Image (cartoon, rainbow, N blue to C red; front, top):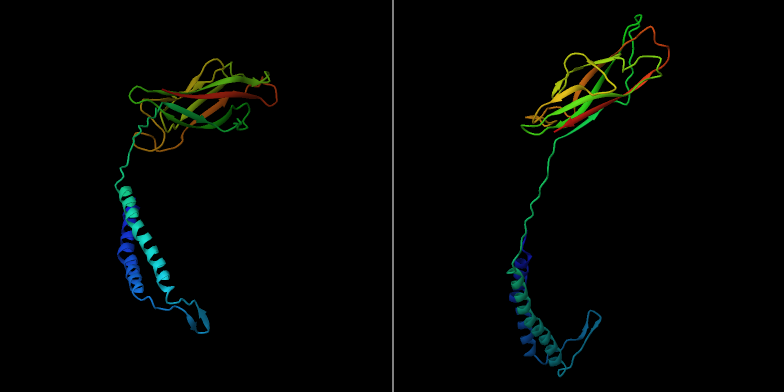
Length: 243
């Protein structure tokens, strides 16, 4: 930061040593010339005229102005000198932040299961789950699970509670995807991804390169000839937790 007080000191010094000094010389010169007349006509313009006895008074006014500024200048210099010598105070503040383990998951708004057209072939569909997670160093862990919070409706078709819906997990970009075929449940959570200690999303290094992370789940729904025709729907809740 520029110290403006030093700049002003230099400006006042120049004023003191040049402008005011020349003013003083002119004042003294004019005081020694009491019969100098300022006036007359020049280029058709009437100038002010002072008589010989008025001239000393005019010059005296100019000298008084010089003395007033001359007296004020040291006071200004002293004021800026005090400002330049002023002390500054500082204070410090410690900032803290508690970074905890956390997880976030998102999925498309809906997934339609379809059949290949072969007689009574199972309905299938792939769901890409996006997630972000951070687990505690050394001792942390985390899980992503799924549970059916409502069974298929109406009740004349497939039933999750009867074991008609299964899934697989593949290509988890953070953590370990579930192994083997999992059977969805309406009463308990079943695994999708397992997270270890010190894992985190994004940034590379000890974290993953991807942000968000993803895992693909492949659902299979039984297609029994006993099901009544119609459109059936159920609700799944996917949960991620990290410690």
